[in-house]
Figure 1 (cartoon, rainbow, N blue to C red):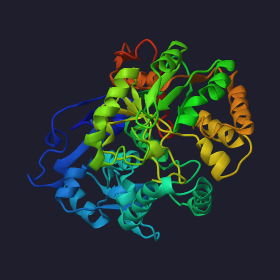
Figure 2 (cartoon, helix red, strand yellow):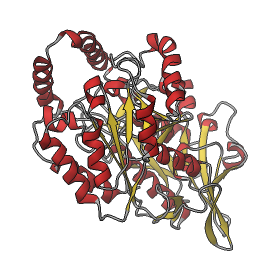
Figure 3 (tube, helix red, strand yellow):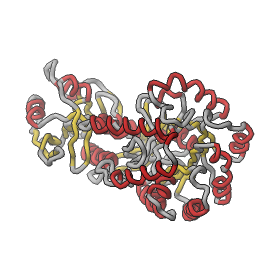
Figure 4 (cartoon, rainbow, N blue to C red):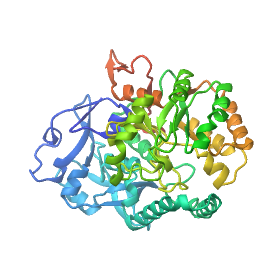
Length: 492
């Protein structure tokens, strides 16, 4: 459907059909050898009359080569964390290519001052973005937005979190909870990412789909997120932090079995003994087992400790046939997670201001970190709901789930047998599951099933056969084609 000079993350992620063809000379011939637009990725729609419309941007590598630093700006109130070409520079660059270019949509800094624009060619309808969409998307997924414009604040929070987890064994439980509750009053007021839902990344997706609609002049096909006609997904997980929680698995397992659900149980192999028979019983009953770090001391993914701890975590995964990993306290390091040797990770919240690392990946859909599938945690944790925020029912879970269902997302929940020993939270959990039991639109899946599907989807593509789009590849038998309407965008 489109041609591009290079791979484009947004198109690959949504499986929008396109092919790479030629270089920038094919699309904008005659550019000087050192022209910055030679670093463009350009999407082209061939028209019957021979004219072309383009969607172009300068890649992050090209921007870096020209000394343009990453910054924070806003496009139609969408936070953009990426290097941005200012209007003066963009005008100079676009003055050397065909067309009548003019700024169309302003990008603003934190004080509301214009810093750049999305440019529009009034002759052909082509569009020039002053930033690389791939850089902007990855800034959300990887949380690199934390260090763009706020490196000092982020470092202070990280050091505070590390110090807290180093001292936590010495702090009485009652004092720990008091500290967390006191901090929550400030954390809940975080401007970004917003809690309990941050839409910035998906607003960017919608904006980009809208541009593709203008480019293509027809609905844009892509492979929908969920298989077999489901419109959203529900995944239940448990982190078993202590021996006490391990001994009380049945309290939550029985609730799920009564509701016809299955879940994943993440154990800490270096903190308490895990009986192979317990693992066998869980897996025989249709549950999943994963690895929850090695010692649960806040250091399992710290770069200084990974090489030492990875072999023991890998041994536990092999012993349990575990595919998945979750870092204790959801502490995470983008470049470390793919090196741990797991099929999937589920340590990134979509947004969670209450955890030690704060932040989140700002999406309710799975994504890749290199070859690792990331399954975002999208519902508030039980400890947050019942202990920190002192809620007494399931309403917070149901409200967020309804929002995720409306948006076609992944509702992924963590509960802990360690914190669900009392009857009221367990009753709330049972009511939550009961409220969803008749929803036939939900794919109730194990994490490993979602990861496997996401890989099959990523290995598939769309082809137009006889004027009809078809899925080709391992997702062909179960995938569904969705369409983003031209000019209207989509909320994928």
